[in-house]
Amino acid sequence: MISQAVPASGAKTGRAGAFGGFRTRWALLLCLAGGLAVFASFPPLGAWPLAAAGPGLLVVALTGRSLRGSLGCGLVFGVALFVPLISWLSNVAWYAWFGLAGAEAILFAVFCLAQRLLLELPCWPAAVAGWWVSVEAFRDRWPYAFPWGRLAMSQSAAPDVRWVAVGGAPLLTFLVALTGAMAARAVLCCLGGSDPPQTPPAPGGTHPPRPPLGGAFGPPGSPVPLWPALGAVVTAGLVLAGGLLPVDPTGGAPTVPVAAIQGDVPHARNLPQQLNDTEVTQNQAAATLKLAGEVKAGRLPAPDLVVWPENSTSIDPREDPYIYADIAGAMGAIGRPMLVGEVLDNPQRNVGQLWVPGVGPTAIYVKRQLVPFAEYIPFRGIISSFSSLPSLQPVDFTPGHQVVVFDVGQIRLGDVICYEVGFDNLVRSEVTGGANLLAVQSNDADFEIDGQVGESEQQTAMARIRAVESDRAVVYSSTTGESSIIAPDGALISHSGIWRQAILDARVPLVSYRTLADRVGAWPEYVLVALTVLALGFAVTLRRRLSSPARVSST
Image (tube, rainbow, N blue to C red; front, side, top):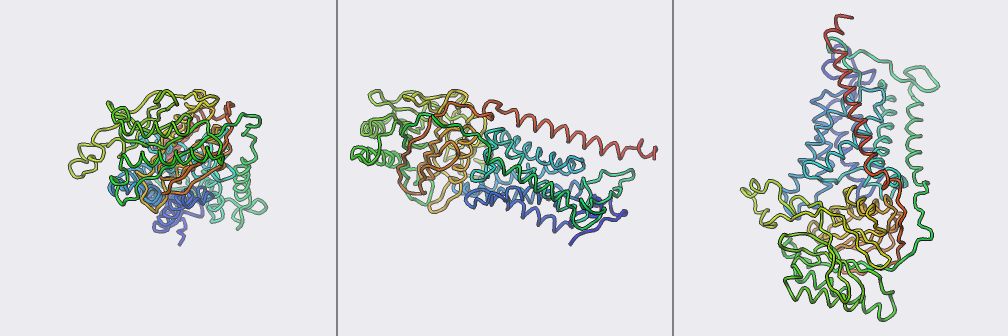
């Protein structure tokens, strides 16, 4: 099972120390287990401790690998993570699912070459943690700006989630990955490996032996290396102690009643029937009329704001008097401002529009980050040659470019639409723009199949992370679920099921305080990425220096 290092084969396998890494088949199985572990840390499984296990298993698998072997390990890990994680995309098209998952897996595999080099540094656990932040930062921006699979977003129910209020999601990803790397360090040392686990090649391409780490209270090579194990335990303890951070000073903040409408959509087995335009709008209006009846009967308080989901109407209400009448009639019944998710034409835009009693439709927020393969089709010309997928979205949506904060009495409402909840800068921009309450409008019917869960739960977890990160209550309204009203500490105040009509109501605090994460902005990510790039440059330089002809002649 374990291959032992021998000088003659060091150049071939890249072994270091007494433990030279697992054989290829076992390394690939470790990567498969690591990718699946990270997947399982996200909803719907939600086994958040496994988020640290994934990075640890990847380190162990890469130990002793050549660069080509590291590429293969990274590909297996990426496939095991992304294929099940975004399986909900199959509701659009199976090739969109596999195309996006495959692209993300390949990108992850290429980055694994860098992690293999970083393992040669003395400070490799921190470098590996920075590597995870760097990979996520890159994927958030290219090739499709796809933020799914970030380690931080698996921690919405974990004690360490409060770290996001200090340094945002990048800091939490760093800490989770550091926990896994420190655990891997302890495991490798128990197996007799050196520290760092990858010894840079000596002249002639061989890897000089390094003494294995011994125990804290024993000689080198003793079977129980206590210092690495103690380091892993202390790291995990400090990360979990984030739950004790005092990052939620909401005491004394004014509270207001709000409501979220989940009108549901037709329970069809195909996407076009699910998104029957008029019926979707009628469902939202009917649920709002029920809310108005409950308020009139005194069973519920009158909300200061009602939030409808994304795509509550896919027909521009300015051009269809019946759709306009449905929305206006519902607003007239409840007598309160409503934020309505709409598709507006000329140009086609996905917006949240504030409707005000006695006035009608007013200000709009235009979605800034569009969804690939849904709101725009990447490589439209190529895909059209073999697929009808582009016909589902004949014209690409036009993105917005402005922060919009809606004034609704005491409420200063910042809105992000569906996919945007995964992007740090978009949510942060609403808070820095003055929002004291956040709304997330979503249409998960685009990606959910009746009776299945996944994407909606993953977005709810992201919304909970955003609540903690910015210390803001979040009203999350979805056509099909899971709609939620989330407290500033990430707790679910009110929560619906999926594929049903639901009305959520709660009093939420209006917080104007800005967390450290919102004040420092993207700087934690920038610093961690910059340090990781510098570490990689040092690792490459060290490897070249130790294998250069000048080094050979001097020895």
